[in-house]
Image (tube, rainbow, N blue to C red):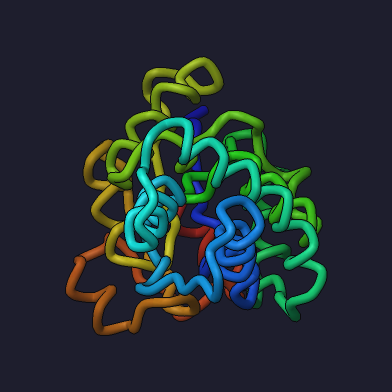
Length: 226
């Protein structure tokens, strides 16, 4: 039986947290470093928390040293549970139904490949009641600025969970998700229900482009056709 290892992005693919991460990062600058009226500029889509946090520190005149980064990350993770409760986030259409169907298949292994810090990923998945579907191992944004490096780390971390001939899939909502799929030789499924437009995703040339995750049978057919 051919195994399929499916690596799901979180934000913009499975859930929309309505800016809970940005708010928590902003509060962390104020609470940990005493920055008055902090601002975090730029988009988060397709970036890692390591890259976002490092840029936020330097843009406020702080040194992005390991010590400074660790302090910032810890403060962020302290604020995130509260901001998740405060913001009207949601599971994106079809996401829970799809992962439930995939988790029931003996030929499928589910994990996440995300720019989130590992702890942030766990908090978000638990908040939206998706955590039970995914392995603890995966790819996270704690140590890498480049999404491709996160994908390589995920492939290495999950090697013990699948056979050498497993088919790899990356499911995400940004061109960076498509690019990191290519970095590990995975099939790329782009979902135009998140932060990138359909045109932007088409330009990245994924193997499959879906408007959303609502058509569970169509998604399952992609696996059966390989």
